[in-house]
Image (cartoon, rainbow, N blue to C red):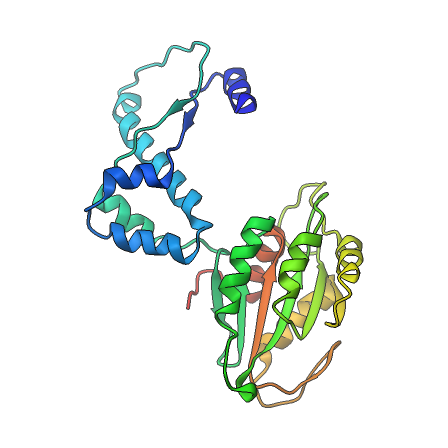
Length: 273
């Protein structure tokens, strides 16, 4: 918190602390659709902080917009962090429920046979939530209905992926692909390049029986194109061999850049299941 206060003073801006979800609930209990919003959080606890922050930002904006639009200037003085008091309206609750974040718990049905699961998780905490989410789509009591599961993964910068890969390894993928794709249109910061060798090194430490491969630049583009073109019947050849399953589930996770690249190549950014 000292760092945030220091930065706020340096740029001479106000600093606010968003209340916890429980505190907001004490003000919102009984409002229309609040129980539905609570269930949304229960289904994916990682959403709690994002929803709390969103409601806090909207509340702050509404409380300040009249003063700002009137041209009232704020006099600056050294500040400390102030906790916001947030009482959401029913309209704001409906807004949260209707909001969809591209690349966050997003399922894209490329065809009846190929499904991409896209999530920007790149921390241990968020990877646990992503793993739980993906697992719900891959549980079947009939062996012949099990999808062929493929993992697309990378990390950027100095992140150590070992703990994240340890979580994902338990999903029993049929094949793992570590991606090094930097040829797309997305702008990348110099220190945010894919760490292919690090991913391979950390995966090997797990002694997993799941085969792993590397996808770089044009090979990555071809992989996505092949997935889009597959009819579910013709023979499908990959580095991992021939895919005999009738359904393929692909999880792309580990990097915001990877998610952006997949969405760009699929060209279905705003199509939701």
